[in-house]
Image (cartoon, rainbow, N blue to C red; front, side, top):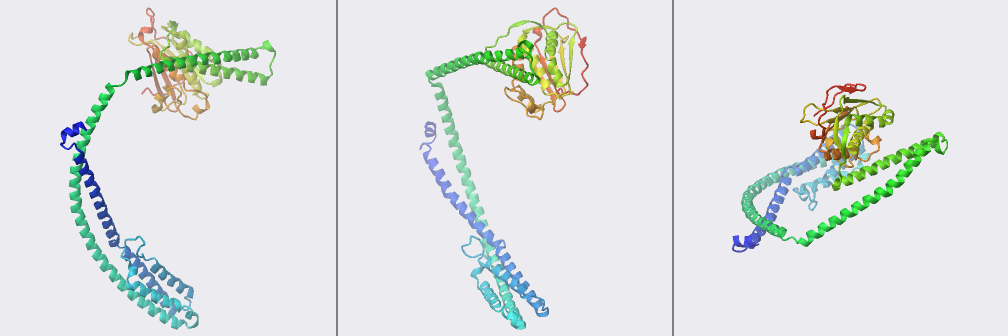
Length: 488
């Protein structure tokens, strides 16, 4: 309040009190005027006229029925009784005082009471209809005409009251308009004053926050740092234990399952061989998952170091295809490999680069239906400012453009009818991007939903070993069927 106190002699408190007092006083007045206008509007909009009109209509229908009964003996007593009940219903439905309706309360007038008396007299004479029909009809017609006359007087009274209420409503509107103008001018002045006070208060709070930030306790910062270091050590220890405790028994399971597949331990029947294959496949998947998790943990911790050697990309790609030939056969797709005639030798981490290629090929096999195709291309551009590229393209299910950024986030998978058929943790492409980033390269994806996906891995030009002349002549295996790939 220091700045406010210096700006206003009374410290700003008096201005706040006046503002809130005016708000508290003016708001109920506005609400009261609006409620009065609402009540007058409902009374002047013809609600009572509607009730009176409905009553008049039913009286006329009763008169028509009685007139027909005079000339037509076929008019039954039930028809006359029904029309009489409708008149009573209209009288009973008219709003009464205290019902919550903003009407002229026609039931307080004498005319509805007289109409009810006439109808009660007709209702009491109904037994006469079976004994002396003509006498009953004469009495009923007389009382109905008298009731219609009362309804006519009621209509005149309703119109007169509505005209008076319309004048009252006009007067209320004029008064409210002037009050609203005064209220508006007052509110503008109040809002302006409050706005100035709020700005001054916010500036004081901002200055206080800046001062508080500068006075943060150094001991708290050190303690937070120590906690972070301790937590990081616990995480590293946990990951090391996981690596040891899970990898060791998994290696044993995989090794023994491989021995059981061979005839070292005796022949197996078909069912046993199938179970052993399932054990071996599940162990391999679980081991790959553990390795991916450990790699991701080390990458996030910034402790991953590249073991760089000279690698021939052509041989690495061809080796990856050979190792996955059984998976390619089971997937039922054709794979085309295209590499330059000259070796494309780069300096990189062989294990990580091979994992990049394996993950991209595995994704193509997983999300391409049987009968589709995939293509892997190694490119070594002639322009020295461009680096070598590995392109993996397929005719799979594709990805919507808005979902492409999601596939590079850990543990995220794009929903799809075919994607849900396959198991996976969503770590393949995130690891591809992380490993390529470690090499200073880039990963680009272009995809058309329902047509296929193309992933391009580009390494920095400085990783291409000098003295090797790249060539455009290529060694192709099985041309890939022509298809459209969105490069945008």
